[in-house]
Length: 550
Image (tube, rainbow, N blue to C red; front, side, top):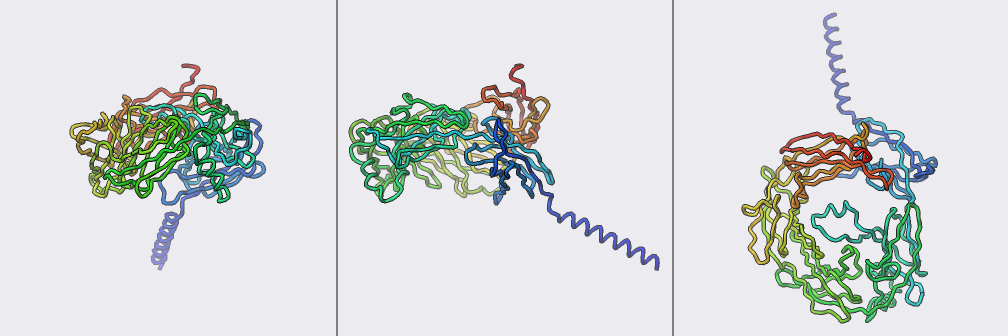
């Protein structure tokens, strides 16, 4: 009997341990908590009602976002956060968005959370945003309503560096506003820096039917209010810039001026010779980004377009049509004088036709891999060519202009990389692609591998983790056609970074950490040269050097 009881107890104990083990297995991972304060820069005044937000990085079916609002003392706490890596920031009207552990105006650190972690005493120090206010009048000093006023800035070094094609520095849009019935406007939420203010009539300013007659009077006919840059000039080189400090509000006033304006018209023709219906036509000055243009049109049933009220000057005239399988683009320079310009023809497909095939050995080819050719020599005309692969991996580009190109591939899954790209015996990845006018172009064969390499590491500054450092990886030696191998990432709060997919090869790795003082130099690590193999994993430690000791 005693033996039976003992056996029963052993069995019961085994069952209970199994149940306990199963219960632990079924438990959800412990969640995380993040807390801290939101204060102003300098005075450390609490910022009430600031939105504090965590957005989970990486692929996910549904984006995970956690947020809260700071209280009257600037304090916040976010609970029940799942583990992972997050973009972490705070924002409030009237202030610049502040990223976690940001230095100056540069990007901040990622926040990496492990199950059950509590991150306390986070400090967001928010800076007042700058603004440009003012008044736009006509030539007689009367207020000009519903004029689009834009704050333009010069592209920064990172934006230009990210381009394969060397080119002139453009002005790009930061923010804009419409004038009211008094001609007044206010452009807010601006970072400290240098801006150019541009005023122009725009289709976006047409708000209701009652303005229809006045709008026609302003935009049609033989005169037009020409776009004007502060303090009332037509050309960028004549314009006066506005330099803003944090929290500063700068006021300007200048006049739109009527000028003789002409009409340009023409047709857009598809590659097969038929009219290109519903193509978008843009006309814009070469020194300003093509996203800033009030001179636009859409082609009709016969491919025709008309753009009225065009002041004299130098322009880029472009047409584009976003077909899924084969996006179409064409552009040309255009000089506009005092007479109407008609019988213009923009023809898609002028140039070479490039066919090719994408192969992914061992798996089914995913839909919609994008193959893009980007010019490697500077030009005012932004030529490029693009296509999407079909289910069988084939693709076709039409109208590829002559020139030298680098290859870029988009839409690959994590871990995948372009292993090779050849046209006949020519290695496109390392030597680029030359398109000759009128020449027969051999098929382009692209092979994708599933086994990219991974690189991770840490960045330290005076033996401490350097959160928010910018780590750049590029081919060694640097090659004009291999920009596709270049990457950039910021470290998390532990100074850690990771590049999950890199093609095999030799790389140069370097880290930069900006100073809190925008006038002080950044600290930079000594470059490390590494060699990555397919499916390989490597680690590297980067140590920032004090610029004063170099």
